[in-house]
Amino acid sequence: MARIVSIGSALQDIYLIDHDDLVPTAIGDAAIFGKVLVGSKVDIDRISYEIGGGGVNSAITFARHGHEAVFIGNISRDPAGMAIVKALNREGIDSSYMNFLERKSTGTSVILLDSKSGERTILTCRGASEQFGNFDEKDLDLIQPDWLYVTTLRGDLDTLTRFFVRAKKLGTKIMFNPGVRELEQADTLLGLLKYVDILNVNKDEASNLVPGKTLTELLSHLSNYVETVIITDGMMGGIATNGAETYRFGIYEDVRVKDATGAGDAFGSGFLARTADGRDFKTALVFASANSTSVITKLGANRGILESNTKLHMMPIQKI
Image (cartoon, rainbow, N blue to C red):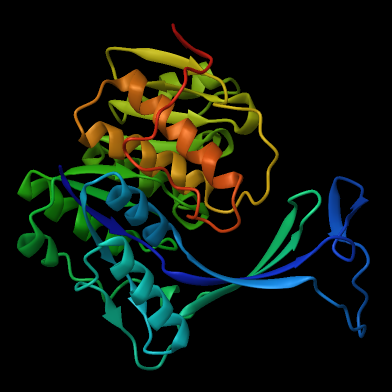
């Protein structure tokens, strides 16, 4: 068992689910929910209240895997925040390092979901999860984590740097899954990768950091910065290296997508959960893919997260 700190956002996700009024309509290369007209009233089939956010989703993976999970994030003392606290406590996640902001509401997403296709549009008021400058990296001194798992901090590279530097002084390993705001500062971000042990990005994100058109080219360039790099490519699977081994992998299963929310979080945290167990590189990649696949078959960003003892089958994965 490892002690893993997850840093990132905490959100309440409110799903508005319908089978006919939210059907996507193509407009060129884009699409809209075509039957929702301005000024109209639309009857929704059902509403579901879930919790999410990259920091919360990853912490749930670690806890269900049997690790000692600690979450650092911002919420408020409102009903949404209390729902998050209740869920973290139910999962056995240490929430004592969370911050309660008085003048912000807890981050909330309203997710319009077409139940037939699984297509969705997400409207987010980030509230307390909008900024992270109040995080105290000295909390790591008290926690003494084995791993630090960081999702997007909305481009706050100052806070990111403080935690990376502190983690390395403590001998804590770091896995990083940057977001759009971090990638917009690519030059600075590349300089921070010297602290990172595992980098997890998708193909588009990788191409924002380094030159290259193919997965192999992108992996080759990123491995100059980080020893272990994983690049995912949706239904095409992905590619990964740890310096000693390189694998090209497909998807775990071809399943009907019920809700893709949280798939990326499930993949990254699933990989670290198995890695922190001391399992081999290939096994960790298989569990990551299985965890992500399971999540998209359930409503919500974390209902489908797997337990550590889940029996898995093999998947298309080849050493190159």
